[in-house]
Image 1 (tube, rainbow, N blue to C red):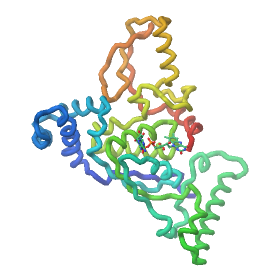
Image 2: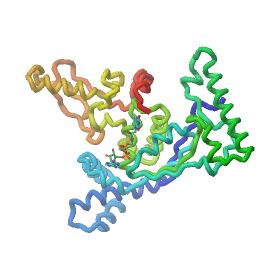
Image 3: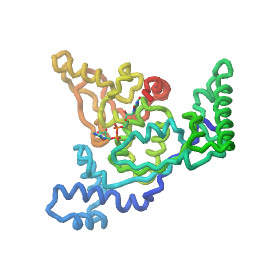
Image 4: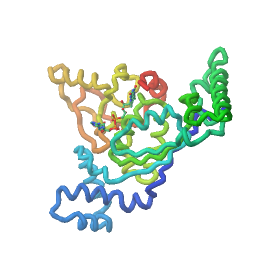
Amino acid sequence: MPASSTLSAKLIFPTKEIVEEYYLPIIYTACRTCYSEQVPDQIWDRAVSRAVADEKQQSLVRKVMESGHGSTIEHVNFTFAISGVTRTLSHQLVRHRAGTAFDQQSQRYVSFKQRDNYTIPASIANGDLPDDLAGRFQAAVDENMDLYGQLLQAEVPAEDARFIFPNAMQTNLIMTVNLRQLIHMSGLRLCTMAQWEIRQLFKQIRHEIFRVSPFFGSFLAPKCVPLGYCDEMGNRDEHCRIRPHRDTVMAVWEAYRSGDLAETDGPIVPETSPFRPRKRRVPVDGGEPETMPIAIEAPEAAVGQAGGSDRV
Ligand SMILES: Cc1cc2nc3c(=O)[nH]c(=O)nc-3n(C[C@H](O)[C@H](O)[C@H](O)COP(=O)(O)OP(=O)(O)OC[C@H]3O[C@@H](n4cnc5c(N)ncnc54)[C@H](O)[C@@H]3O)c2cc1C
């Protein structure tokens, strides 16, 4: 039986050394150019030579990103080699249009000789399903693959024989994406409402970015983390508890505005935005002061329930 998932996302360019040396200065130069009388190459020289310290560069970049001036982070790109993902995943991935380039293994020019390059979801492979559903699922896919081989032998072109393939078929891609779009895509695809396979892919992508730059990696999070609330209609019951749902936030706001909630000295909680990780005081009625960590991982229970609300 094929592995339930064999997906892999490897950052092939840039290297850690290139990211460390050049990526922050490029973005810093883009940001600083907006606010400086100096010409950009002067700003660049000071940034890349570290006459301006990394901390100072990061501080400006973070503020500009927080202000939503996203073009500044379109100047750097990341290229990933993605393999062992299904066509189910790739169809979702290539829906992202802005700031991305994709090249994908062709089912016209490649005649698939391997007969086991498909993925069986864990809910089927590891599930305790009645009536041998798991075995029948695999038998059905195997039969399709056999038929595909026979069609090729009968000299049916691969571009036609492939019509028998299921969504479970694996594929390979190269994806190049700029940092702005990578943050946007991660916001959608790390969300617990995203489909499990593409979520796994973006967890690997985030891991790869952290490997070359913890600073840039820290911006890859489910969209609710920078937003401060969840805007997914499928999470109105708040089964995913990374952030409160917008409905809850608005209800609390309405209550506060109409005077039903008093402003008191509340506990110290962290700023919800990773773009501004300073602590601040918020008005909360009662309770002991405590410091809560920013949780960008959902509790496992929430992860397990999330897939049911997927549209794809
Ligand atoms: C959980 C989940 C479920 C989904 N279910 C479905 C589904 O059932 N069916 C389906 O068809 N799709 C579905 N999608 C895909 C979704 O609708 C988007 O097509 C996909 O996420 C691409 O994101 P994007 O629209 O932000 O485009 P991107 O290309 O990633 O664009 C990034 C941003 O650039 C801007 N932009 C890009 N292109 C334009 C443009 N032409 N005009 C104006 N602004 C633009 C927008 O602000 C956009 O948000 C789903 C996505 C998710 C995350």
